[in-house]
Length: 272
Ligand SMILES: C[S@@+](CC[C@H](N)C(=O)[O-])C[C@H]1O[C@@H](n2cnc3c(N)ncnc32)[C@H](O)[C@@H]1O
Figure (cartoon, rainbow, N blue to C red):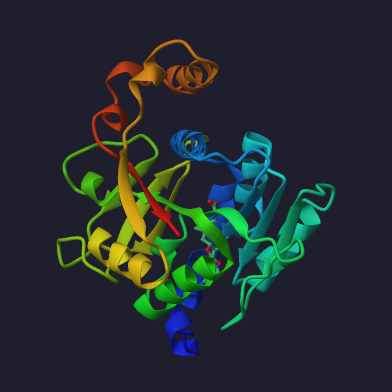
């Protein structure tokens, strides 16, 4: 079941995006913030033990901590240097623990033998280029999840690709072959809040492939959620006000964005 070194090229190849991702991560995109919050809203994480798989430099683990009040968040990543960075950045937070997991290394259980209630892979599976490596991730997560525990995957949604939609933060293109196909690279141009743009690539994984891998890795139930911006964002809420302010300050018509029409993001929930 364990991936060989060559199957982990995914990460090494993705490593070329490293510098670019560091810059994105420091300045979380407005629309990503909405996607993270929607995901957290779907899961019951208060007081629970949470695994943040592919935590990079710990920002996503920190976001989970402050947004959901879990008992502990364990962030793991294959990149040793990122984990060292995460430890340095968040050393004051006793409810955040970070581990690097190398080739074939099992995910550590942080408290005695307690398994995790919830595992998150946010923007992780599209950074993996090899099916073996992807399967190994799902398998190793299922080994440390409680029975009935949930694994949630958040990513961009293939339904939002190349359909003439115009998103404020994202401008993504289909792979060169013209359609969303397992293992093919797609490109993204991101617009940050200061107006700078950054380009990077990710890998396509079809829903049927993800489902097959999840089912063969110990998960019993898989469901998909297409995530458009919810209409509730148009009405009064704290999030609405800050979100609206950001768009209005930049002179963007908030009411008619494609983010409300097309599912820019996708959530996949799998139960063990
Ligand atoms: C795009 S970043 C996402 C970071 C974070 N989850 C977030 O929401 O901002 C993807 C991360 O997944 C990690 N990753 C990729 N393949 C992995 C694997 N096989 N095992 C563990 N981490 C992996 C990468 O090192 C990288 O830090």
